[in-house]
Image (tube, rainbow, N blue to C red; front, side):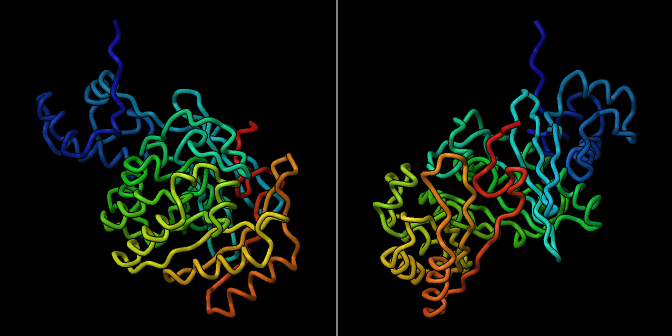
Length: 346
């Protein structure tokens, strides 16, 4: 019976060094292989040209590299690029490159499907099949960095964990991936250029604060009225606003890092004065800014983009209270690459 080979990227550098020593080789061989796996993002043992053929054969015999493959790539009229990414077990997730005048942002996925049930999001209609491994998250960033260099002539500048899945429900793997993305032995990106977006998993926000993370936090809020929030995001019954508030206050005390609220305004759901007042009040608990996001329909008509007037009312009210607010126009709508549209139609 063939033994199942271990994914070599699940080993630490020290474990790789130990493996080589145990197999009668020098410890530094582990450093060389580690560099190929991460810094050079190699997906094939044969690429490792400073390692002997015998050593490569031994690696092949003992390990696999469970890497991703960009299955299909779509380019939007506005320059947005969407990747359908095939995983080693045949499952697919999506990731997106979003260009602006000055920078390119990678929007990456952390789960296949999603464990939450937000009614307005296409990804939530796919059941969560599994968490992504650190290497699979890392690979999405590497692929988008290559596309950024190819299409826009410069390296990737920012990363947002706003693709498929709830990143804080795959906490350990997301943190390991970010460690490698920011490590000098990986991609060497600054953590200040990374934003992790959560739907508000309070206890994990506190854990991030305790772990002294250096990246930014965004919260998909969409309503600061409990009943409305529970209706559009049913799972939030387990994460009430009082708990979320307390977690965010804790986050700010520990990290001194501002929170970004992601907020979609829908017609007849949260476009009234009471919703605006509730958001203004919630914004006063911790230093924050608000991104008002254009809604991208997902076919069923229950949720509709609010009027420009409603958005203006939000902006005016927030600015009156010195809260920074921006309207984020959606990118990549024509290829279903915009916020809430990632649903693996491919």
